[in-house]
Length: 389
Ligand SMILES: [Zn+2]
Image (cartoon, rainbow, N blue to C red; front, side, top):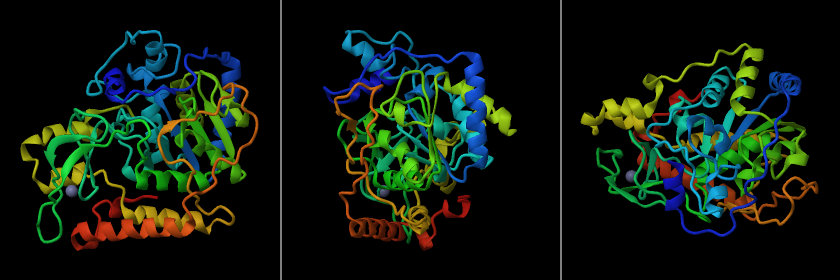
């Protein structure tokens, strides 16, 4: 449960604005706003969705800064009443709707701060998501840097060894000598390079960014949706509480994310697929646990972002005039400490001044390509052939 996750993190003083009262639009207002958003989605070329803990509360997982959030209650010496294990939680209507809208082509990419693994378990492909803060169902090799889906949630947080060897078989049949670690970031840990690179580039070319269930207080994730504005695009917020960038939004919808996603899918004529364990990679892997060394198991469990995907996105983003990908100035995961009232944050800031110069970015991407070439048999990544975008 998210409390255990929260308790596993290091002490951290600046957790942001907590417990801000929720706001609810009336039904008629929601209908009007959702119709407008659906129209924007219909005409947008590159829709990117940014998700936070608010899309998982319907699964029984508490959020962090809501009126009954983990950090809000912690401040009062309390803990949430509602608890469910990560293993027992299942994707919500919003998770399934987002997955269906990705499959229908209406949403191009998902950028999530959530570590609950519910996007993965909804059937979303790795080519369509950046997980900026980690995933409780994924372990990363400390040596080859590949990521693997686990059949159950990992026992640690903070990128600690989980007591398993890396299963990756290199060219020539040699097995990687690395140890697996959880990939859950602690406060002020650096975000994973490839997830962040992909998130930045998709955010840069987005002409419509939709923020779902987050108060956008954690940087750099919370600043990424604003990049669409620099591309003359639109920025939409769906959240019950006011957000850090509330007044920069072109549209703010105060209602449950499930409700918005289901209405949008209906307007766009997209059928939301129900959650089925048969499409959940963690459940599929549970049935294969007796053959952990088989190629099928290793292939199914691979959750590594292909270096080819990063290169491809870099080319696409660089081709857009005046919108070449830039690094965010703050790579560490932490609370934005700008001490302003959260609902009165009107001044446009230049939030994306690159500190990592373009030449350095080139080097980083080249390094990733080299690394991938070294560890992939025949130079072909098993996911490359499945890339749809
Ligand atoms: Zn490895």
